[in-house]
Length: 271
Length: 152
Image (cartoon, rainbow over all chains, first blue to last red; front, side, top):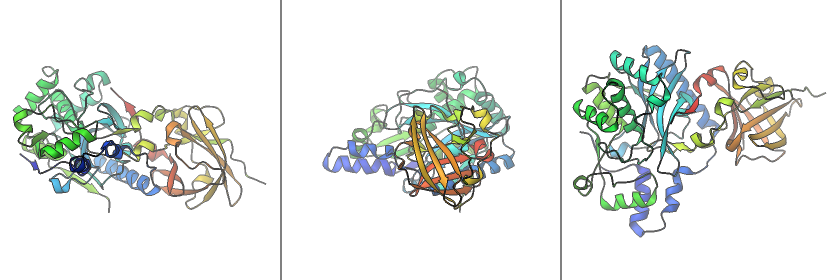
């Protein structure tokens, strides 16, 4: 099982603000929703990463990949990437990414189909893409899901959102969690119809979430400081021993090859 | 005499209409600051509304595709679905209009007289004012990399 000693830098920032002084932490909560204008350099870099990723994915011969980006620095917590989506090559040629996005400043999220441009047109921490090429049989199952009716594709989507949602719970669902639960449903479309069944399949296949070591002050700060952070879905015995088990890109990328579902991760970095 | 390219409009691609909510979204552990305000535009010929499918075949006008060109905002027109900036090239007076959709235009310096710099990248043209992006006009490659659709 992979371990991270603490939560993300963003989260930790308002955790500290909240815990240290119990100040009005709402001001901290708005941090990720600032309406900053993009700079020309950000657009140029994001689109370049999208373009090069598209070329590399074409060259790989894959039709479906599990694609990740690095939205913020989680390195000191043992995590390299922050977010993943299910990417596939359309018949028309362009790659599309289906992923779950949290509405800024709220506790809900939705599923989107976007281009590689949108996926990387973000204020990325590192201009680096990473992906796992699933085994051919897995790609075929995922392609059927991704190119099928949207209503079916989102059947395991749950709107209530927490960035640290419990990996084996159903109260909230974060982005990476939706992706692997949807992978499970794609693999067993006849038998997996709800999140509990998808999670049972993931456990059967040996998926292990990351355990974040979060103390009570950090949890308090995160919960008070942001609408999209909650801990009440975690079992008490784990929560009160500071063990927050959630789905991370890094844990998924370690699991896929281990379970024989995909190859080792590939990375593409802009200089 | 001014070269008139007023017939050429850069308008918000229909495919990106209604993007205000999606572009406010952020991914888990991510802060999608830039994307929330990304003013994606595409080229439309003629003053009438032209659908996204028609925009795909239209090239970016020359005045807006020369890297390093400096344009000046000579008029700003707000509408229900966006903001139109009329731009004039300093060197020869050539004009073009840029339409930035909906909320993406908010916060942009919109004063007449503002200088706009043209940047050219592999996937399109970046128009910026005072170091901030006014509009990104994707070319064919850029359009293939851009798509936004809410499924749930």
